[in-house]
Length: 371
Image (cartoon, rainbow, N blue to C red):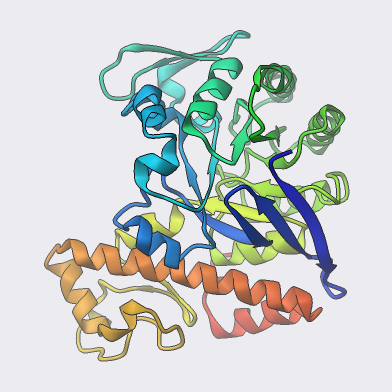
């Protein structure tokens, strides 16, 4: 097995887990957050900058790298790591999320998914086996089973058919794997607890080295997400990592860590940064707002990074002048804050006070206000 995982401590107050994930390219304390490098780059940041604002583990996208530049070119570089000059650990998704996001450009069959290229309309086909082979060429430490990520409010019959297909695809993908990369099974089932339990138990019987929870943070309400992760917490194996896909807002990170999640990823911190929203220790701020025009304070007074030397006034100016540096600085800040947040969460778990930490965060920030 190419990864190892152990739970080091369980918070007596919340039940959250502090763990250690060992990969071929680094050892990481969990829970942690992974920046998303969809196209073998974390948007606007260099790999050197990404290293400073991550734990040393990032995610890349199988579907997009398969289309551009193509698996062969990435393979010629020795995989994504050589391609983008990243010496840390790496996780790739399977293309399953694109089955959800490109609804109008795909057709699902038992064999796999027929796509139209989202740029030029050419015909594409992705099967569970092909997804695994592409991920083998991309060379990540942790890879994902090919699945369907269904919309959250589909009918029971649709969801049941989808889950059964995802389970068949998980087995096909596992059988196709010819490397020692760690392949995770993905628990689907929408908001139906019995389907989720069925999917989880079937995947556990296949004995994957880790388990992802997919199909959340795709349009459902926050409390529905939290109910599902709480429900799956006692079902998923205690001694294997749990990865909640596509979740990255500060309040969601805290709530889902309490429900036993070890790993997270999301495009949110870099996406909102490009529109001028900054995540700070004092809460979320929209730096483009006029209130910051004469603000001489650093973006985050409590977090010392290379962004700290610039005033809020200057960073606002960069956005108003449409200068790329503004996006870069806020992207760096947002990821630096999430790294800081996860370190504080891990410390709170160790000290058996994560629920107290959550209450402190509610008082100090506006992250829990959007409820």
